[in-house]
Image 1 (tube, rainbow, N blue to C red):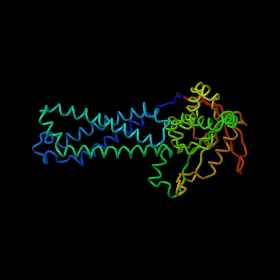
Image 2 (image 1 turned 120 degrees about the vertical axis):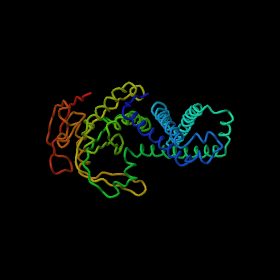
Image 3 (image 1 turned 90 degrees about the vertical axis):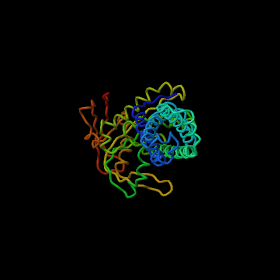
Image 4 (image 1 turned 90 degrees about the horizontal axis):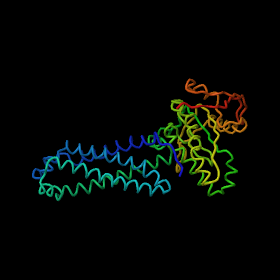
Length: 365
């Protein structure tokens, strides 16, 4: 119903999926099939299926399985699983992976067997051998377990936020650390009126559909969704990534473009069109893991509060985007055509005044 951008999201699936399956099957081959030609001198298939040949089978099967699984995630599972619970999504993704592995391994093995022109008797001796039977059972137990684990990690990473799971596992912020970060606070216009019109249940469905459209874009623009607070979304970037290719501004305007593209769908489904205003600021914050049970990575410092205050001033300046002078200084100006409407203001809770700019930006293609 609602269309969204793909781009980097599609590439990322292939970059992750193909190497994982190649590693998975190569590791199994090394552990399980080393020395087969010496262990079973009476089974011709095992004699020919030495570790080198077996590794080729594993590599090709892994590549084919990874390619098919990534394709299934992007063009089939992403849409069909969007309304399912996390548990069901993991089970369906795992089952799909097992089916695609079976298909890939069957095709590659059949091709391999045909190359050696084995007799029917030689193939039967191979298939009924106890080692073959046990290897198949062990292989599928291995594939199912590894696929479950992989899909669980992917879903956990998606639910916690990009890079959050990795940072928690590595303990990057176990001890509070300082980082220079860009923050963007995005707030929906007239959210109170929309909520009253739709009622709380339909309003929740509405927000789900709205924020779902940001997923591919935030990945493509290398952002991290820090949190959702009601109708507000907070996105953050390490400063280098935020300025790289103007990712921060590109994210805002591409998200606006996706919302405009889906205006007809929103109007048909909900009778309203979502519009956002945003504030952007940069500065040094402390980053730390907080909480024992519901552990999160949290950002603390004046930058976070200031960005929120800047966003609140969008209505006053009649603009959808307000940015601080600190952020403006790092923009790659030659890539932008913007008109600056500057104002020196005093923000609530801040002693020093700050200069903000209302941007009218035309982003390059």
